Image 1 (cartoon, rainbow, N blue to C red):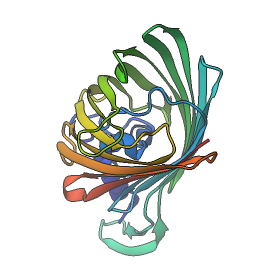
Image 2: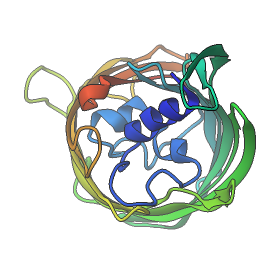
Image 3: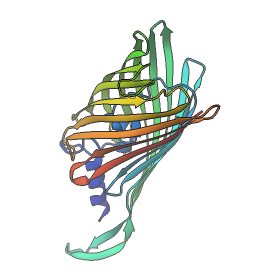
Image 4: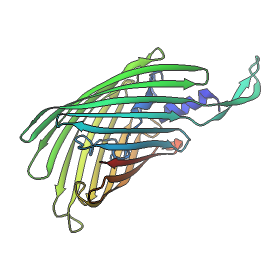
Length: 312
C-alpha cells in the first residue's frame, strides 16, 4: 500500500471525512479522534468526566482493525477548589506497508522498501470554576495542543487552541443537570488550518441509594450532543450509562454504557456503540479503573477504545 492509500484510509476513519472538496486538508485530524473509552461508549458524550475531583493518571488507546492506532498517556489534578490542570502526550501510528514505484511511462515498477506515517503530540488543559454557589457550578475550559507529523517524505509542526464552558445545576439529592459547549481546535500546521468542530450538549446524572436491580447503591446517566465540523458536516450523539455500586466509596463499581453516534458522510453514518468499565477501591489505597468500548466503521471494521487509570 502506498502512502497515498494509507492516508485515504486514515481520512475515512476520521469523523466527517468524505464530502466537500476541502475534506482531508485540515491539519491534526487525530485531535478529534483520541478520547477515553468512557466517552466513546456513551455515543461520544463526556457524561462522567466534566467535574472530576482528586488526582488521576490514565492511559487511553484507540485501535482500528485496519492497523491505525492512537495512544495517549496523561494525568490531571486540582489546585484548590477553583482550578484543575491536566496534560497528555499521544502518538499516532499507521501500519508499515510496502512502498511501490512506477516507471516514467506509468507502468508498475515494483517495491522500494516500506513506508509509514506517525504523529507525536501533546496537549495541556485547564478548568477554572468561576462560580460555585448553592446548587450552581460554572466553569471555563481551555486546551492547547501541539502536533509533529512525520510523513514518508516530509515533516510538519502545528498547534491549536480549544475553548469552552460547562455549567451544572444540582437538583435534589444526588441529581445533577450538566450542559457544555466547546469549540476547536483552532490553529494550523503544514500551511493548513486545523480540522475543528463546535459542539454543544447536555446530560443528566442521578445516584440511587437503593438500586432498581440489586440491593445497594446504583446510578444512571443520559445525555445528548450535537456538533458541526469545519467541513460543514454534522455530527450528533446520544448515550446512557448505568452503574452498580458507589464510585466514591470502597469496593467494586461496574459501569455499563451504550449510545449511538451520527457522523454524516463517514464510513458508517450511524454507529451503535457500547462498553463496560470496572472501578476498584481499597481501604486507604488508590482506585484502579479499566474501561472498554467498541464502535463499528462499516467496511473499515471496528474501532476499539481502552482506558486504564489510577485515581489517587
